[in-house]
Length: 583
Image (cartoon, one colour):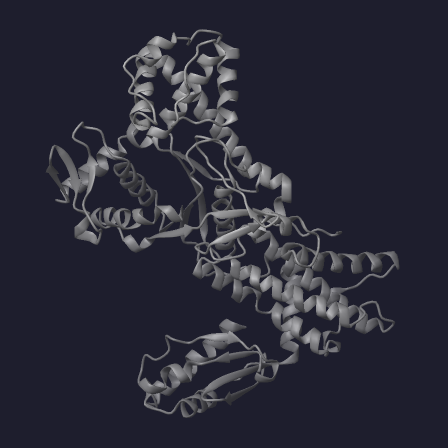
């Protein structure tokens, strides 16, 4: 309905321009919003206020001229000019009935829109280093990314979801060395564990698997392992210490044996991450290996393209990208003086490859701590000849866990953290997914474990699911009485109560809310809509009986209730949240 009104207003403006009553080209700022007060109609348009100055007319005068030029539409009962120049639209009663009929006809597809028109979009999210299990800090990005992917697909986009596996960086070598040192302890070697190593119990588990399957094959004596390694903190440098251990591990084991340990740690944790995400309702279409960028020559090709474009220069033995030419705060190294390419060079190659795969738009969901990387990545795309604006970076603030009013502290390196698996088992999948996407992704979030566990109307996901369960309860009561309702034959004109009309008006807004949430990349707008719908339904349910003796009124109310249930299911499904029939 919102689009219908938009088109009617646009046509009226074009006719006014053709009649030389207003300048041409004033039809690009039309905003149609649902009215908050039913006495002011179902929808309002402020276009006369927005365009009055450019049109050279008083807002109310322009609004009146727009109303005079509006074509008739059976769904619109009347149109009024209100206040300083608003145009208010009142829908015909049977238009509301058509909304309910459309919900029953379209079922799971009600709310689906074609805003994306099939354009190809890639969403890359989570992409946590496979150096440990996913923790609650990763959960918000996972829930937000999966929900946004669902939302964009529902809004007509062709969506691909990707996880970038950081399997070629220094952190993976620290993990491999940590695993080997724990393995050596199981072999009986006494070696002080590095302060910068990975200390979680999962490292012991991987080391135990290595020892169980290989015995002492990879054992080396402690003196050899520590030979020439700089001192650890606090007396020495913890970074140089762990790098020395890595160098010795690679030298003593040789490439093949070191790779066995490296790959065991990598595959074990990637498999665990993949399973955790699947259990969290998140499945990726592609798991892209960072290592493949070098193996397939993509990094070198990206550097060659930048060099051919005149965007690189040499300084102090290193190769630099002139990112300041494209708005970055400083130039960036792509190849160090030792010949090794930088992590940024991998980023350039990875994003080049995204667009080479034919995506029209790429959405990266990063932690807020990656804010400083945005300008340099966009600069590299511009230098490569791509539209930098086709890359969207959405920053997600980490969620902070609270229990009994106290913050739960976490440290990934020390292994002291709450895993995503533990959170899911504690509060349940539905609460975890819902709580993570209740707010804008870039807003700080306190995750209240006590509230998430609570089964009361104070818990927002419980409140929504309870509305659906109430509807299902009424349906069961009908079945127990042997009543069969033909939703297509119900006389919806009987629904003339204030609460009923409010519910119907709100149902009709669902497709518009989906389109707006997809356009703005803000899934929480759908949650806000569902909470409003649940509030309206609970008020109606508490005010009026559904199973009344008047069969026509009963059937009409049950038809509307079933429509509410369908929209609740459709909205919750986008969030990855279930709609239980009993609670």
